[in-house]
Image (tube, one colour):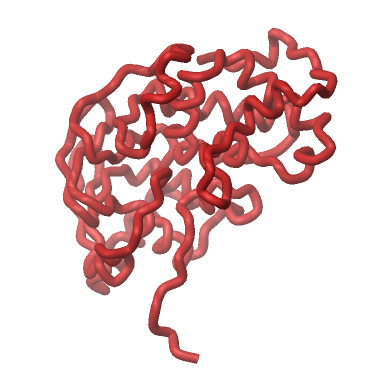
Length: 259
C-alpha cells in the first residue's frame, strides 16, 4: 500500500482523554505542531500582545509545549533543534514567546482542502491564533448573541477565555472523576455557549450527564460543547441535557465554575 495521500483528522483529538496520554512520543509531538499551525494569515493574541502570523506559523512557548507533551523544557528545546536541523520547521525565540514555521506546510494542509467551520486550536493558557485582528471581550450570558456567532474559530481568544476553558475542564474532571488536561481547544466553543447559557446552567449540564442513560458513557467535555453534529447540523447538547426531563442533580457551591 502506498504511503502517499492524506488522512484527515480533527484537532480536538488532542483533547481526548485516551489519546492525550503523556508523555508524547516525538511523532505525536510533531503531529501536534504541524496540526496547530495557522492555516491562513492572521494574528495571534499571546500574553497581551498581538502578533502577526503567516500561514504555517504558530506562536507558543517552550513551557506551554512542555506541559502539552508531558516533557521538560530542555527536551522541547532539543526537539526544536532537531526539527530545524531536519528542515521540518524553523523557529524564532523571544523573551516572551516562540514563533515556529512549518516547512513545506502545503504537504500537510493543502489550500484546496475544505476547512471545518469549527476548527479549534491549541494550548494551556496560550493566546489563540486567529484570522482577525480585533480582540473581543468575553461575552457574559448574552442570549441575544446566540445567532450572531456563526464561526467562533475566527475570533480572538483572550487570556480570560482560556482561563474559562480551564475552569470548565476542571469542573468536568471533578464531577466525573476524569483527568482531561488539554482545555485550550475547548475555548472557542465554550465562549459561544457562555453567550447562550449562564455558567450555572453549563455546570448543571455537566452534572446531568451522569444521570443520562444515553450520554453517561458517551459524553466528553468536547462533545458537550459541540455546535454541530456529525451530519453538520446544528447541535445543542447543553440544552438537551438541561431539558431532558430527567431528574437533575443538585450542584453544590463548591462545584461552581469560577468564570
